[in-house]
Image (tube, rainbow, N blue to C red):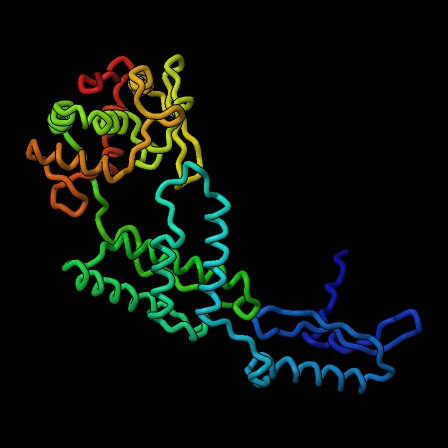
Length: 352
């Protein structure tokens, strides 16, 4: 026989009720009230002798909650986090994190990196005294337009969308940090970025075998470019970043196992690459007494870039990230043809 379905009480009827306590039965209330930050908080109290007293106490509690929720509180009691507060809090944590992770191998060290300077410039653009919860999607759109115009006035051409996108990522990170830090922003949602990776075509400049051969011959023609030639060869083989090459130590390469270990300051991870030809080049460099006692290539990146530019232009190959058809050291990471060859063919003619 089917059990009859229990009839549910009307919603809200259980807010005021009588419950058994240690001193006897008392009237009271059990309610959830929305807070100014958007969250819900539960209130329970069963200490009243009559139902009328419990009704009166609950009405006063709800009135106070409504005043707080709809901005009827005294302005002095309302908390509003400003853009200045959000930026200052994010800068404090970020700079402390940079200092905590600083090592002797940290390249390009600056007390105020470019993305933090962009964040401060954005704060002046929107207004430091403005409330964080007033930032909307349109503010990001206006910022993109302003940055594009600033680039045109500064260097005659607009900034790349990828550059502006990186700045927006820092701005949104600071706002998300404020949401997690300040209680008045718990219900605030940071607007999405108007720029996506599909907003522009990424660079895809891959040097051909003929171009690689010409640049290698040009670098080998001058003894003072020997370090630049080594960087060019090792970077083509491993596909490492500039910073990874400059911080490489001797013990991170093994001729026996034919491997090279690279540590990325960007991803904070190690990766081991199977590249016997790279390990042989590093061992040969150590036998020649180049480098230092600890590092394989202790050179400033601007010297390497300048040598690559001169050698490339001497053989009629355009160089430069902003030059139409030009290449830059980071593009060597795109040279995947060699890395996809079978292992028996991994010793190119230009690496000997």
